[in-house]
Amino acid sequence: MLQDKITQYTEEIKAFAPSSSADVENFRLKFLVSKGIVKNLFDEFKTVTPEEKRTLGKVLNEFKQLAENTFKEAQEKFGSGEKQKSQQIEGDLTLPGNGFQLGSRHPISLVRKEIVEIFKKLGFIVSEGPEIEDDWHNFSALNFPPEHPARDMQDTFFIKKQEGNDITLRTHTSSVQVRLMEAGKPPFRAIMPGRVYRNEAISARAHCFFHQVEGLYVDENVSFADLKQTLYHFVQEMYGEGTKVRFRPSYFPFTEPSAEMDISCTICKGAGCNLCKYSGWVEILGCGMVDPNVLENCGIDSKKYSGFAFGMGIERITNLKYVIKDLRLFSENDTRFLAQFETELI
Image (cartoon, rainbow, N blue to C red; front, side, top):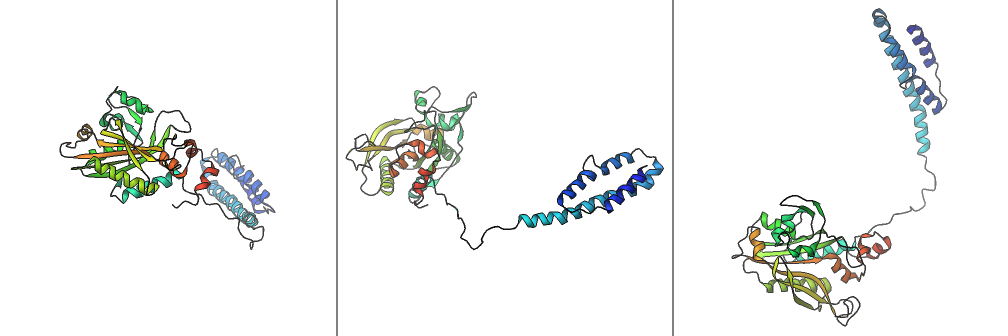
């Protein structure tokens, strides 16, 4: 009968005297698991008559509490002993510690920070935007109409094709310029650092992702002379006084007139070397006056306001600053390469 079984197991539990944690575990497996004695007795309790349930219900619950309390006391006794044993510290605590190695800023982060600091002194704020963009902000608003040949200059990764406004990974941070101009009113003076993506073969001179810093200044009576003086100041701050600058006519859909800006080679000082292809000059950025169509696309009166814009690859600036000849080193996480920048100020 159920009452006899409860009495028998109660005596067994009261006589339980474990001598190790293994005995405690065996007790749990016998009484408290899903197929243990306590569970089986409750299953059997369901089959007794209503009269027996009135008397046996309380007895069975007391038996269950006895089993659980007995296990808990035994567990605390032997568990605490095991815990104390595991917490024993081996070795001589008076010896010096092993220490740990500090990391360092990535060279891209170092140069990005330096560029931002230079332009902040000129009154430029930092503006950021999404890396996943729509066609309007990445292309159309910047004078890249659909099917225009200029789009081939920036082959990209399309995430989703949809009629009228495709979704893509941004090919430049110029999309942040569009968002800035759409959201406010002139004047604007901001730089836009960030990661960009282009569908290019990975090599020592190109990668499918890289980092840019673009700049925008829109106000009344902004001229190309303002652009030249701003970039000249940047070059002197970044590469040192005496660094020469030259501008060459170029083409960008979103600026008119447009120019490429070169600096005298920082390696050979203009004498000619492999880095500058023996020309004495190295291109570092593109720039120009913001095209009136771009201003109008963003809701700005191009007859009242004018502006300039520029954009540079942070990897290119870093290459020249630290004489790094392979672009792939920036993303390979080779600690031998990264350790060279531990002494750089952050």
